[in-house]
Length: 424
Image (cartoon, rainbow, N blue to C red; front, side, top):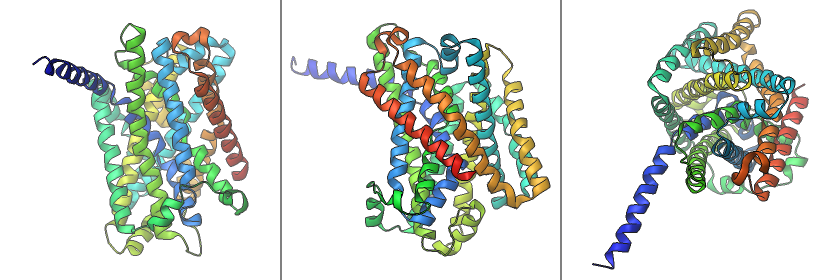
């Protein structure tokens, strides 16, 4: 009987720890959708159709950097009780703080533009709705978001988790139909110097890196993780930081599967064609014929629609967090979300109405350029503040995390700037 008591005590302790971990599950899924949004689809499609499986290691590297940045977001809130926007307001002068707010707001509108266009394209593929009207229909999903936020974060997190699983399931089925070359797939995860010698490969690789880490995700995660109970002692806070990091890491692993899956699907279906397939609508049109089944393109469109809706939810949430954090303005959520959506809707409707639907892909690319230009203004303050012992106290980032953070920041910002120069 005595020998059973320590075992039972350990099992009870594990159960309590698992129950506490479940309490931290959710914010990671909200964050992960920014890493599988429609803006990522174009770069993944281009990478796979042009270079086969060779850039899979770039997607893996991008995902590892994303995991690092999201961990720093968790660490910031657990240590200080502040999100990134609030911390910037507390640490920087009013002028710098307002500049960072404008930068973040521009990034959020650009992100929302990409999600709106992605959803409109999906509606056109699935139901034949013209892009102009599809964009208007998509803009109305802000009403659903408002209803869910009134029910609480848990309902919102549940919806997002369902949509993420929908995306992953659709891509998984597509991969089974595509039957990729496993040996070449595995080889694609090994870094190669070919990225420096093959024309165009470096540009696409930098585009993948630059389009992966989203600035609004850093503001969003550093805020919503604060909805959990960290406890009062240093021990419970360290445990909370560990559990919240597990949550985001697991969710970002799913995002990695989706992004890698898109590149693998593109490589298996389109690599070797005379022209690279970078247009999302063209990819949908070709999939049915290439994979030999009539529902392959439909699955592709369903995943795209779920991706756009998911990222729309988190982008508009980030808008309110940024406004309140930087400016200390308590504005009704529906005003912030509606204004963000209108700011994204106007350029979309102007381009579609005046230049035609054929220019939508170019608008998607430009949204990613704008996002890339804003990225450094979120990464730099995050890495700097989480490495400041006077600000973070006992939970300051260890030296090895600080070094990795600065290296990742330099790589992401450098990739983004190179991507922008290449587009220009």
